[in-house]
Image 1 (tube, each protein chain N blue to C red):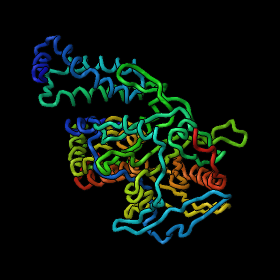
Image 2 (image 1 turned 90 degrees about the vertical axis):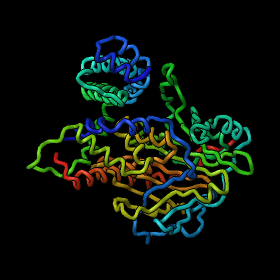
Image 3 (image 1 turned 135 degrees about the vertical axis):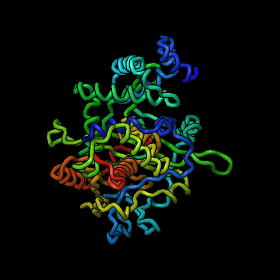
Image 4 (image 1 turned 45 degrees about the vertical axis):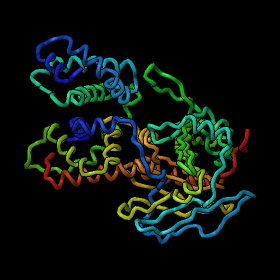
Length: 186
Length: 284
């Protein structure tokens, strides 16, 4: 099913939008959520909440050309939220560790400038990632977008743990330098 | 702005980056390499001679200067794979994943029986053989605790196993054997072809990363090892012990979250190095 058709159904409040979204992307959205929460039932709930969020936001949002990324971002956000609120989920400690790693990328604070919106900062991160090799991009994304453990990344690509950890360290250092050089405020 | 905001911002990266990372890994023509970062001032060239201890044959790693740093190599010999294991590996190698075979074993004993290799460790370490749960699309399923990747390569018109990488989770308990001190990951590496063992490396000095510290350590029984610590983040220090026996490289990795914890772990690693032995013999 064409994404443009699905988006049109959302805009026309046609419930086929939800059915077709679930059919086309449901499994992948569940996998993203399960990777973050580590819990199958929670992942299913996050998936369903994603459809509700999409229904409530399209329109006015119009994710033409990037529907999957739009949905994936929603399910990722919802899954992260659940992990933060429910410390009993075994992935909660891992999320805390990842968040601490991301703090290292923050440029030095600039009192004079305004706060960056997440979307704008996300675009800056995209520009930074495009300066890296595909291998480094992938390792960064698996860690900080998909929230994989270092062990899982090492196994997926046949790398050693040391290589993954050092690559991530350099990516974080590089991102911090990039944001500082580009003058991004925090 | 804080770490949570950064995590949120990462969610907004471009779709092609998300899709690229979601895809199953593409063919990677590079020979599998294993590297640990070492100190840039490579004056600590290691281990020039052979060492023997308690009747065991320990092959010291060979350290050489390369154009981009210092590499630590395994010896030039190859590990020998039993014929039945070779067949199983080649049958399960996945062409979509660069002809790698992904295997699981329930125990160190089962791993040894399959690969025909000794397992050299310390009685101070306990392998964690608890099975893992994984989702396979149809539901949750149990898989063995010990995960292995075996790469393959083309040689003389046929495909053969090339490099084996094994992960074994290990626990360190206190003297009474009841209280867990820390958990680590033991990585084992073996080459099965001359080419793989020639190009395989077990260490590299990263010139622009001064956060690594390397210590040459020779145990009381003359076994040459490397003990390393790498500051991979604020308050995160990776500690490790590296040694090789016959044609297999062992690297034990343990994470510390403070300087005091790292000191304690590094002391433990020296202890472990001093008690290395063949835990049980190879074969069925």
